[in-house]
Length: 424
Ligand code: NAD
Image 1: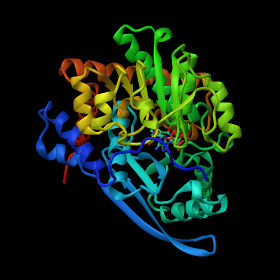
Image 2: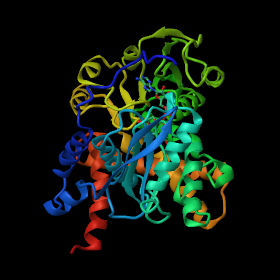
Image 3: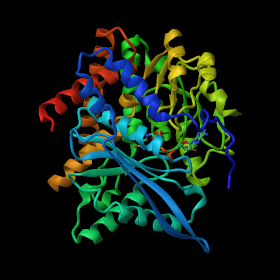
Image 4: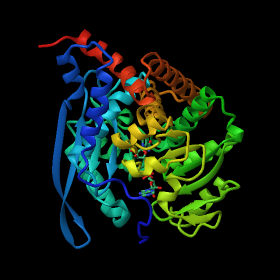
């Protein structure tokens, strides 16, 4: 087992949901929407908590898990499932709320949802993970549904877990319903392009922002925190666009190379080294905190939430931050970055590529007809560029940050839906 040696997120007692509410309230001030409607958009509509016994090693352990449906203004709800020891109700609520706003920004016909299972996938055997996943799927049999609530992967989960959930769901309902979950392996109805989609969205957001800033990607340097699904694809795609990725890191180690890190070599290394960067020789080893403050033009936090704290924000050198992770910047840090004129492309825009291609996967499952990777990527890029332009326009029209511009964009769309549907 490799120890965690890199950047630590802010204190565990920090309320992520309050952070979301704070951004929401700031954005709401720019609107003239009725207070009751704003309260309804802000609230989590359903919160499910469950505990189930699973055999782990020679013991029975009670596993704590959640599913939150933040917004029913559009159904189905959509959002990933996270496996981590940090999972708690507050975190899942925040992640679900971000999904509502993210789907609205990306113009997808979904409300937001999120799931979380409190476990450390790195310490569990494949068999233990399968039992936990199937138990979770079973407890969610009446919550998940093709037109009710569609999960997807998030931190600590991937196609393998999605396949187990689909199988459990199909067994319970006695029919094949691939559209109940996205991020599936291709042979089970997954979409081409889904695996790299969030990283691709990060790349498209970066290019859009650089264009607005008048910067040539070929003369730009970047640092990427996290080398999992989002970070590794983002680093690869950024470097394919000519951006020099000088720093990369994961929970085991971080590396810097002034001349640029060869991302393909790093990907090959990780593949043969148990999925981690520890021991990589393509750069000098640096501390995780140094990766965030490295002298680069673009910083992509693509690992954890709350890693850009006030203290880190003061020392950040990048002029552009693309939030690949959900909630990597604390509200206090956000204010400092604004003072420093650092452009922050917020999570609810920058990492929307994943849910966009999840939506394409669901559409393909419903049609029973599948697109080529080129078709998926073209639709994805157009959707991300359109979303970026809407947010940029709102940010400039209201003379505010990209984060508030994104919240305003989302609020405008959700308010219309809520109002038109009416009330009791
Ligand atoms: P992942 O589990 O595939 O990868 C997480 C990466 O973060 C790993 O490389 C891990 O080593 C690294 N990491 C963990 N702790 C770290 C630490 N202390 N310092 C540095 N690195 C650390 O997860 P992912 O799917 O890539 O998700 C990353 C972030 O992106 C999360 O915030 C997630 O919510 C968000 N996100 C993911 C998707 C998606 O499609 N996977 C979509 C939208 C948002």
